[in-house]
Image 1 (tube, rainbow, N blue to C red):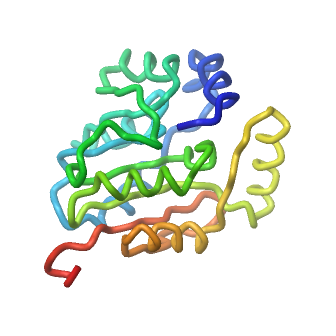
Image 2: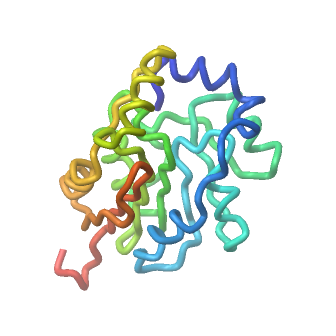
Image 3: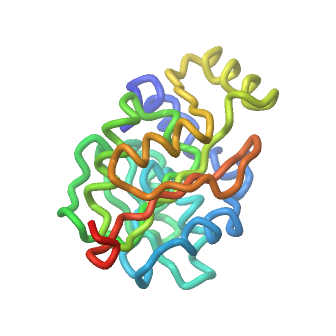
Length: 198
């Protein structure tokens, strides 16, 4: 899921992560999940670490399963009651078409093969399900600074402009939308249903 250096980094900082990172934006995630054409009962928080996105969604009655490769981060997610699976996003241990939604919040840039990750997220979505990706725009001043900082710390981060990410979701057969542009942006991909003619 993450590059080897990224996994070691997150294992090391797991105990401090939630004290230093801002909470995930509930409104941002909800704006993306609103595109779903099905009830949100089976939700995955992929690359979810300590469960930042899962915590943001819990008050809305949504309880995602956190999927991550960092054992240290998952231990923190489990400690606050989130269901969690240690797995690589390149081979999610989930059957085709069973997830109502997949959330990837501030994590895609850490995946060594983002295209494979997006393909796996699309594969597990049920028709009418939604993939919500929160990322950072490297074409903004703050985005360039973040990319530089992560590279200085030894991470193999790959950032995508919103339209490029939307094109990547479309290439996986999802109807894609840039919902919230800016430094932190949201891109949504909706899996077509039979009624859509797909």
